[in-house]
Length: 280
Ligand code: ADP
Image (cartoon, rainbow, N blue to C red):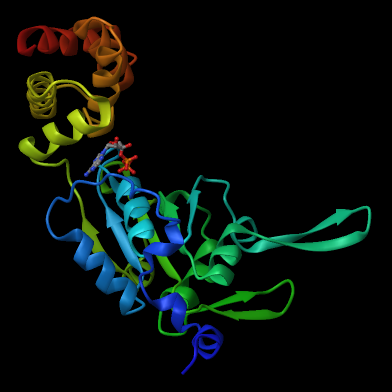
């Protein structure tokens, strides 16, 4: 089979191809526990993936890293409560030349054989499941109702969705019929040695400072008496470390990047700040 035949069959899309990243360095991702191999197998087996985990634990970075590693383009959509099926699939736009069809990000991703990452998918409107279901099961098709097109996903295409089980209420969780279409992978905060390395790599601070910030995160994560929706994530640690690397005194960096990011309540902020003072 020559290359043009392979291309026509979409087979070239199915091979990891570092050349597609243009030789650019892979986005840095420190693996927690075999998730890269699992992602790659899911992609090879044409299975969609559900990533679960708290905000700021590395889900987005993981997908960016894997897309580059597999040589696939990445289309990311941050879902919100107003996001509809039409926002994902596309719509007719009225222009000077009349009405033209404009692909939405999901349609673009299917056409390109890209990895399509829907971040916080439970936020999206319920009508989005109508387009996600046929893409997420064996059919791997995207029905475009408005144009009558039924788009078959090429082998390189993969649907990845994420959600944060922590802050879903009962009204906002994935329906069993949706979640059972996906292979699920749970990420938590990285264990301390790994998280220290991440903070170091992402901010350029010295290893001992990174380790102190990770100890602080662990202390904050143990706090349960405060009614916080979220706790100190790896993202917040990296932000504090970057401020500190730029010369902001450590305590002030933690206040700005961690404490004030977690709460608006003055009493809670004072309590968190006390933990910062005690640990650092
Ligand atoms: P999420 O998508 O889960 O909210 P992100 O992927 O945006 O989180 O992670 C936030 C930041 O934390 C990243 O920009 C990166 O600096 C850092 N980070 C978290 N986990 C990792 C990891 N395993 N490897 C490299 N960087 C990480």
